[in-house]
Image (cartoon, rainbow, N blue to C red; front, side, top):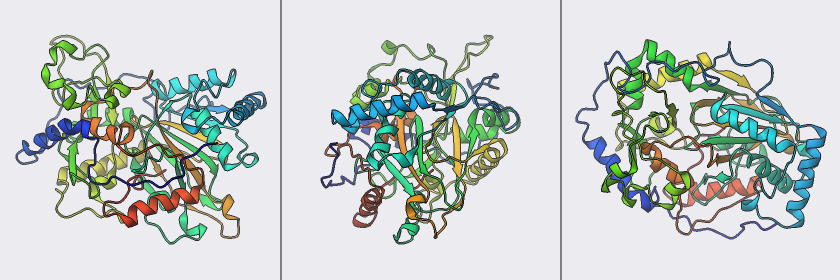
Length: 467
């Protein structure tokens, strides 16, 4: 099958697609216009935000999370034969990775079940597991094709995970494979705090092999449950999380940091301003006419802190979203935070501490087995990773190895808040001279990532939020 094997030339320098420069300028202006990075002592949620999210499948906790395995899709033998038939056709026609989708990877019986699981990821629990692929029976290339085929039923748009255009990211402990110790969470076995992976709609992980000794479980925490807790007990923290003054490190790019909220509210469908009323300010400089914005079908909504509801009318409930990358805010060993970037305020530090505590309080834990997928609503579910250990006496092929995809379903995707367009552009935007890369071999993927970190002062992204 055709793959991208030629060398690439990273275009380090600009952190965002040039089409979004207008949004970047506004982000910087917003930050400068906040005189003293104020506290938020309010005792109610921000104006226009729901005082409480109503009961829904997405509002769960460890006591109410389903125990009937309805969130787990077990592939049957006949469905596995469908997968094999689709795989054979992909190989026979030499269909490239970028063109593996629902049409080219047809699954007549399994497909509708995957479609239903996709609905649950977007509008139900927010996560779904798919089990039953005998990974050891397939080559590395075949497993990648199976992953792309099955994941296409959750989202056919695949995001960029690294500056070289990588669409696949391999996750494993580099030290056990003879590589030097590596600080990147993708290539070490350390525990990870709760976070959202970069900025994507759906996070897909495919487990080729779990940890051969112990550990490697993941915990999942529901944003909706956390929001209701904060609305009742700590509404001031919602103000802090929703404020546009969080300074995100761009790891040496231009600009060195940008600001945005961590928490967002999008109004119910139909409540956005009419397009004719947006004025000239909504032109291409702001990104709503760029190819990326068109691709994402984004609606330019009002600022998250300016939403209002009609007086004396019961509010219609929209969606609460989160996008949290702790290491961009506090730094890490692999990316220490530069001293010339604004530090977090004490209130922001306190908000992150409380958020981590609530994630632990309301999370459920699951360990992927070989041949298992997890599909996660990355906007409504936080996740972490426990430490893991591989048995040195076990062949490295049996050590923990996962593959990650960033997905978007154009028909079911949630509206992306304007404040997140810049980060969405990093994943789904267009960068001149950077083509899609589909690296099947995990060790080559490792070397590609190291090339970006060692040979260039900016360093490649993709290593600070790992599964």
